[in-house]
Image 1 (cartoon, rainbow, N blue to C red):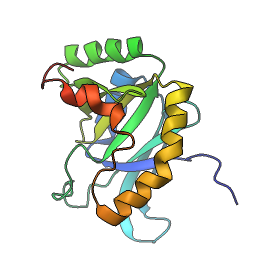
Image 2 (tube, rainbow, N blue to C red):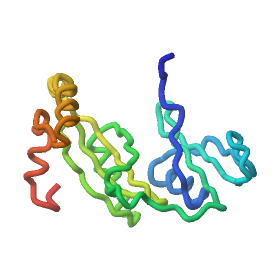
Image 3 (tube, rainbow, N blue to C red):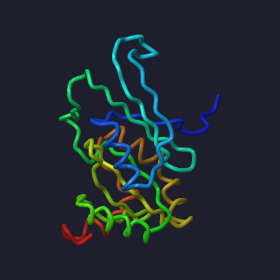
Amino acid sequence: MQIQRIHHVAYRCRDAKETVEWYRRHLGMDFVLAIAEDRVPSTKAPDPYMHLFLDAGAGNILAFFEIPNSPPMGRDPNTPAWVQHIAFKVESEAALLETKERLQAAGIEVVGPTDHTIFKSIYFFDPNGHRLELAADCATDEQMKKLDEVKWEMLEEWSRTKRAPKQAAWMHEQELAARPGQA
């Protein structure tokens, strides 16, 4: 067996209609499918839900569940907000900057662009509190080769020490040297 691609990634939402409208308006995702039941097919539990599917491009599907009979959504209080996020690739840095302007004009707070050397990103939250990232690739073949050559060494070092290995520190040298608010 070999994985072909991600079929879909599912998250919880507070309001299915609001979520569909927000992703259509701000990220141009088409609403492709809705499934709703009064019982969960896998567990047979009596728990009504709305399961919606959005086209994230190139065969990728982003899905959400609205589950009104469960307690309100929360976050893992021990995990920083920047850790759990959904990252979407965009075609260029120009598209990234244009999207940032559109989001800000709609009243959405945006962080970035952040320079990761091999890609540049902006970050913001959807109406459900999920952190989103838009990323524009800008890596050279040489940079990717350099990173590929050290990945196992870095993983082993991290596993032993739980300290950040420095083999790829060059990626964020400029970004981390910038004063807050400059990037």
